[in-house]
Length: 100
Image (cartoon, rainbow, N blue to C red; front, side, top):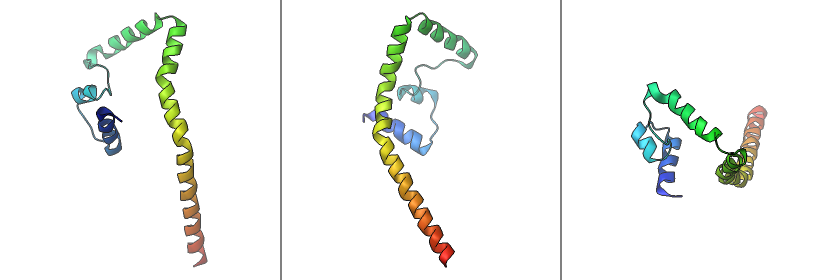
């Protein structure tokens, strides 16, 4: 993981608030837009995207989400195992309390 990724992980895990400039430096946001121009800018970006050929936007979306899907696929079994272990511990604890 690169430095920006580590900073972002800390930001998310610690639920720390950052100002717009720092969010931009971490690539959490692409640009900073004044509130009164936000909708106008969003529509301009959407118009740019919709002018692209449909195959281009579809392939771009697939390319952008492919890594995320791979990370989720690689981690899902670990997460399910942790849930199973936790459920077993809760069941044992509950059974012990009921037996006492």
